[in-house]
Image (cartoon, rainbow, N blue to C red; front, side):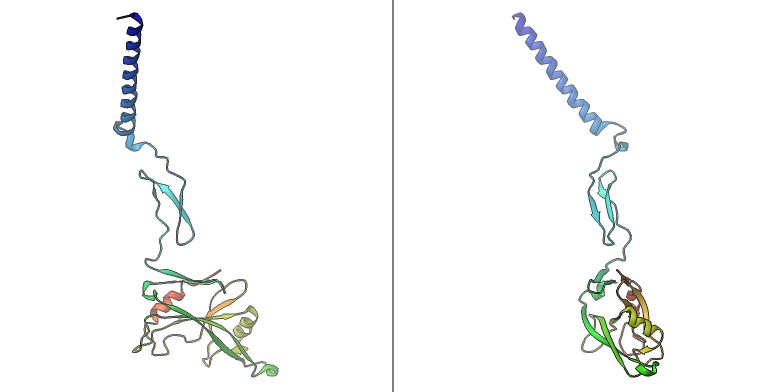
Length: 205
């Protein structure tokens, strides 16, 4: 064998050995090393948006998304962008509907204004469980401007024959929100307990 061919053969053998060595080292480091399970994992910077508007990233050995903050299971959000409020609703309200009605009131104490009438919007979230045999309790939300609410709160305007006024549940920069006087428990409507709990989730924005 000529000297040049011998050198070439040696170079090829060395290259092959080096390639196998590199491959073996890679396999050991990534799959067989004893401490591999404790090595830090670099996850992507993706983020998942949670139902409450917050976000969570990927973490852990499998780079899975972290859990979102605790949510009430199987509840959905009704959001009214026109007036700026929202409520969370359970699955039993899945096929709910929403109607706009009008609340009416009248002046009761200002002598020069006695008998003057007032009105405003009432958003009613209709209970989908109502049927021809039984009416289930709806959720009525009365909407006031700050000026009118001031008169209602001062008992200068009555919005019901009841001796008590509406109950404030929230406000934003433009409106005051309230539930009507005696809106539950004084009729034959069924299931009023659930709407009462739903109203506790009210948020104005």
